[in-house]
Amino acid sequence: MVIIAAVHLVGFGVASVDAVPEWLGGALWFKGLTPIPEAEGLFWASIGSFAVPVLILGLVVGWLAKQGLPVPRFVPWILGAWVLVCSLLMEPSGFPLGLIPVGMLLVRP
Image 1 (cartoon, one colour):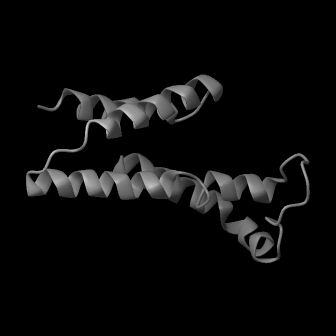
Image 2: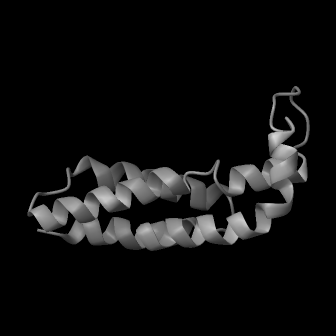
Image 3: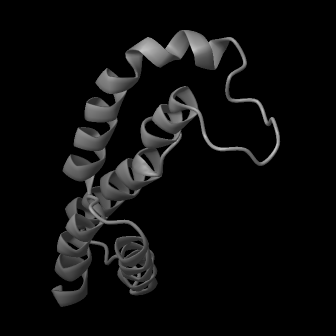
């Protein structure tokens, strides 16, 4: 999870550098239900995405493992459901990669 989130943030972060001035200029403020401009799409693909919470979750899971504490069973099930739904709704995407850590969490003792 940490690697997937970090790659996502770095990759889209680099792609989004040119859009940062637009973000700071108010381009992300709600303007009604209209098609998403490129700058807004880049925001949601980078720092506005779920990569940051997934990074935090991955770090917590790693910390729990180092402490010898189990990850609650609901974590991989909820994460897996989210990954599957997103994988079905958006292709091609990196969502199927989320099944790797989900599988690893499900097969643990």
